[in-house]
Length: 217
Length: 217
DNA sequence: TGCAAATTTTCAATGCATGTAAAACCTTAG
DNA sequence: CTAAGGTTTTACATGCATTGAAAATTTGCA
Image: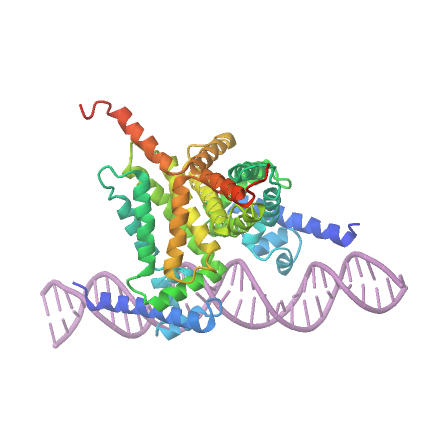
């Protein structure tokens, strides 16, 4: 079914991605020019643009695929499953997908993460991608519970959950070295968001009481 | 105190902003070139870059100022005020600031909002700015409750709150025409996030019961 | 007035992105 | 096996944002 033409295209695509990542690793993202990437992959500079719409686009080449997986998951509501449980499954699955990417090696995945965290242009693009995805996910969540959750509630939930996990993970990134630690931080953020931010008030109050037990006496 | 040099600089800065917004309105953001903006403001193209680091940067010229206001607000914890209340004040204040911007007219503010919503490059930049701000706000929140809230909890709270409000507002943007309506949507998202996403489960369940009252009989 | 510092302008270069048309390359019907 | 038909790649050319460096101007102040 896949003719030579198609296979060759896939090979070129892969070559571009690998060449780019290799060069980004060596000289940094901004310092690597498209011409160099194209040369490394043995194609003309112009050809780059028939595979990716931009330098940034190459880095997030699998964004669409990821989103589709997530949307598909939201369509698998189990009988009687409450909205929050479905969302928790989505968060869990998202981490799984991030950890074991089909096409990239572990090293490549790490490199990409590092690049996205450090290069403002990539950070911005990642946030935009995530934002657009969240809107679509909100619609999907609404569709999964058409009569129970309106679109604004769905958007609120998706935004709160992804927003909290995102910030928590980034805020703790220097401390969490292993994937497992990061995952744990994410899980706690999700749990806290599900429970409600006001639960922080209680927690905070009890901590103060514990610190100053005899304050009023 | 402000010498001629300083005053002139402020005037040029203002001229650039106004020229840019005028042209963006007329021909669109992407279609307006820096050369045109500079010409309209009567400076050389190169000079543009001694006022703004990029075309995008001009649009968000007041981002830093906004962030500082927000950080300052987080430092004004009232006696006995719980974290969630402080955060609500922050959200409220953010909307106030957005509504009545000191330097821009109402029309200009609207134009800018429209531009940011429609131009992907600006959307991405806005999200990046917001992201960076959130991290700083999380630190500030932690500093406001040093013993009660650790950094990760603070980040979780900030991320959840801003994330939910952001998504809710955007998801409902087509329905909410007036500032008041948007503000109301934001408020509900914040309240829901404070209460906890699991509260959606209850709400959803009760809605189903209401729809099918005699289901099990 | 006249010098030193700050600013702007000019000029040149780089790199991303995009359009166009010709050349090189598959696929497949015959 | 071969040529028509479609697709991909290439070479060239352009527009524009951004940056560097040096020349020209303007401002602050003695």
